[in-house]
Length: 326
Image (cartoon, rainbow, N blue to C red; front, side, top):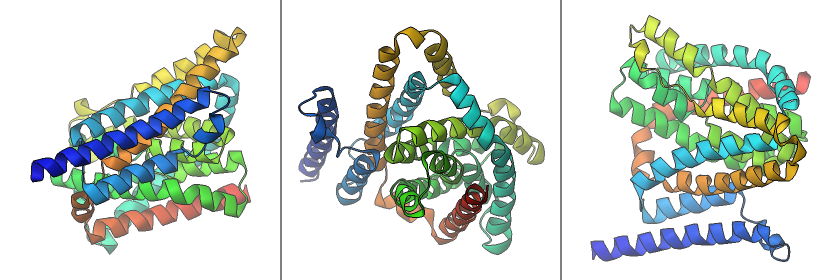
């Protein structure tokens, strides 16, 4: 009976993945293009979430591995649709507040977690790190340096994951409601949303310019993983040799340079690659959604989730105020 149920769940999983991919590919057929527009990052994420929470995880190991690498390939591919000068301008504009927000988020997060909510030190530090920089990537990089236990890593990752899923739906709606332009929304999403996947997904849902701004600022922000891991090693006497460097960021920059100076004469090629990357991003959202489970939600607990939500509200409201006043 159990085996039959698992086969059914896997069949539904494959069917959902096939439908999403099929409609995405319709975009390459002019007559069928209008029928592919409903397949957006939020829709794909919702499909994955609905499947995981109603039927459970079908391929947990596959989801985790494929979503990680497909996201990185998609981000690099997006670089082929961007111009270096424009990207540098966007990154420079968000750099000042990035520095302030990273340091401020870490301090506020540790105060809320340790002093107010009495969350375990390692869990509180990991949640603060994930919120300050780039979600799961920061947690994965800082965890070994901190010598955090697997359970602490799981709780922090689950907290950030749940809030990321919410952000992908909520932020574009709020952005339109507040009348934010593409530049403003891209900057806000890059600073206020934890994980790179949700930042890129929210930017793609808002518009092409928002996607470019959000991706550039977020990946600039992600570079803070290295100094944060080094500082963590000094403060908690960890092992600095275990720092995990997000090399795909370097490839993303190389893709932008290549598109600006080498592919300038054949812009269609860059557009083709970046178009495929956007479709890869949509499928990544499905994999990420399908990775959630009821067990993950139970593992989060109340106090770590409250810390994550409060810290998220602080950074969201603070960054939005800065963007609107600027």
